Amino acid sequence: MKDYRYDKYLHIRTQPQKHLNYPDELQYNPYEPTPYGALEELSRVYSPTNGYLVDYGCGKGRVSFYFHHYYKMKVKGVEMDENIIEIAMDNHNRYGSDDIELICSLAEEYFVSKDDSNFYFFNPFTIHIFRKVIQNILTSIETHPRNVDIIMYYSHQEYIYFLDNSTPFECVQEVPYSILYENNPDERFLIYRFSRK
Image 1 (cartoon, rainbow, N blue to C red):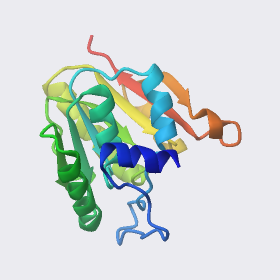
Image 2 (image 1 turned 135 degrees about the vertical axis):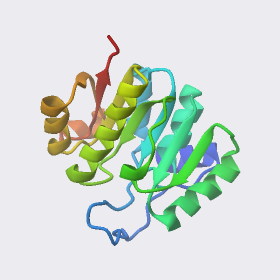
Image 3 (image 1 turned 60 degrees about the vertical axis):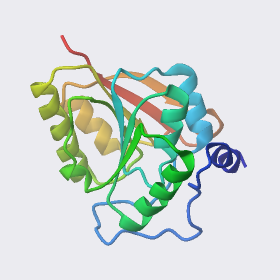
Image 4 (image 1 turned 120 degrees about the vertical axis):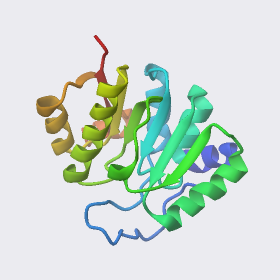
């Protein structure tokens, strides 16, 4: 019910389909939006770094619109599925803001700009793709040094292991989604940060 109310409040439609449509490419996962209740809990305790949010696997745009509305930040949503990005664009037209850009692209082909400082992931793809995306982020940081946050919801253990053991990012915050966390400890946000020295 909360998801429906938030969608209505933001003038968007982000509910999942009754039947999941799996992408043709096996490296990518089907559309599943982050629960608004989880986003509420995150927004109570987390402050993003300055710069854009890049929402990888943005789907219909729920996280993109929520972050823009709540944090008043500029957002880029990256989605590979042409049918789903069309729905996100319809949502964008109803929501109405020039501070949200929706991009139809493979995540690993998205060019990370110097203004991109917050990156959101809700298990949109396999570790193979995730590694490439993180390398693109690190390359951008080398060229344009800045503080960067990686925000992950319901993180694959492979993602966590990779960030902990193969990157300069450090886990700085854990935010459980309290109503589901007790029965499933994966129902949480992990915030990894690269701090410019």
